[in-house]
Amino acid sequence: MGFLQQFLDKKRICIQCHNNPDSDTLASAYGLYCFFTDRGIETKIIYSGLKKIDKYNLRYMIEHCGIPIRYVNELPETELLLIVDGQYGQGNVEKFNAPQIAVIDHHMCVQEENERTLIAANYQSCSTIIWELLEEEGYPVKENEKLCVALLFGLFVDTASFYDLYGERDIRMRLALGGEYPLFDRLIKSCMTVAELMIVSDAIYNHYFEYRKKFAIVSALKCDQSILGIIGDFVIQVDRILVSFAYTEINGGYQISIRSCDNKILANQLAASLCEGIGSGGGHAQKAGGRISIEKYEDIYGKEDFFEFLIRKLNEHIPDAVE
Ligand SMILES: [Mn+2]
Image 1 (cartoon, rainbow, N blue to C red):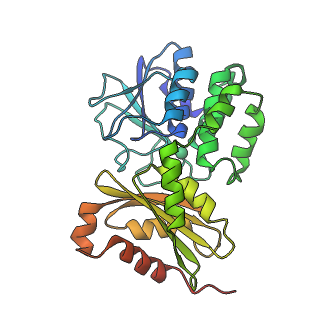
Image 2: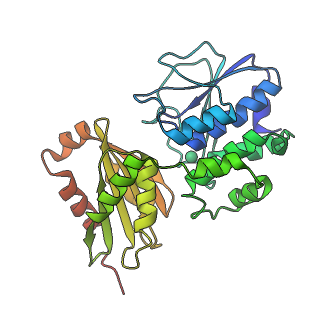
Image 3: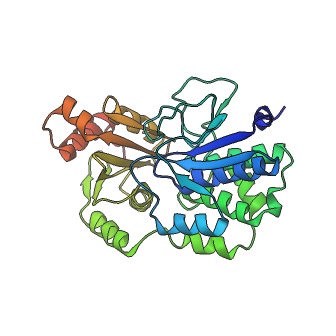
C-alpha cells in the first residue's frame, strides 16, 4: 500500500511548509495538494514563522503555478497536519497542535518515526519524494505542467542549480519531468535581487581565507539562505578552498551555509557540531546549512566574537590539509 493511501479517509488535510518557505517545500506541498484535492479532500497549504514570503521568484512561483499557500498564526481546523520538507518540533517548523501529525522530509531524521512519517535523507529534494509518491498512486504528474515546473524548481534550488545533482532518484525525476517550460526558465533566472547581487559581491570580496587548512569564511550582510548557498557554491570552486563557510545575521540568529569538496570533511557533521547547543544544523556531505540563536550563543560563549569563534571551531574541526 502506498504511503499516501492512509490519509485518503480524511475530509480535511492541512499541509504545512517550513518557516521561511523555499521552492522545495512549496513544490512538495503543492504536489500533495493536487493529489488530495483530486481525491475530493479539502486541502489547505499553510506556513508560519517570523517572516512572510517576499522573495520575487517564490512569489512568482506561487502566482504562476497557482499554489494556494497562506500565512497563519493559528492552525485552521483539520484532521491531519502534514509537514513537508521539515520535521515536527524542529526549529524552522512552527509547532502546532493537531489531532494527527504526519511528516514527509529529506533531511537527517531528528524526530521520532512512525507509520505517518516518511523521512529519507537519501533524497536531494523533498519534491523528489513527493513525485515518487504521486507516481505510486498513479497520479498523472506529467499532465500537470505547473506541477512539473514546481517540482523541478524545488529540486533545482535544493541541488544548487542542479550542479550538486547526484541522487539517482533525483536524476530520474529530472529526466522524467524535463521539458520546455518558459515558466521554469523564468524562475531559475530570478534567484537574486540587485541588492543581493551587491551583498554577494561585497561578501566575496571581503572573504577570509585560511591557507593552511584551506577553508574560507564569507560573512554576508543580511540575506537569505539561498543567497548564502550561491556564495558557497561559488567559493567552493576555488582550487585552494576545500571548505566554504558562509553566514549572515538574521532575526536574532545566524544563518550558516557550508560547502565541502573533501570527503574527509563532511559538511553536515561540521554544521551539526558547530550548532550543537546553540541551534540546529545538518544537510548532506557536500552541502549543509543551519541556524544559530544569538541568545543561546551568548549563553554558552559569552562575548566571544562570532567570527573568531568560527575560525577557532573550523580550525578544530578541519585536519591540516594534505597537498
Ligand atoms: Mn528541501
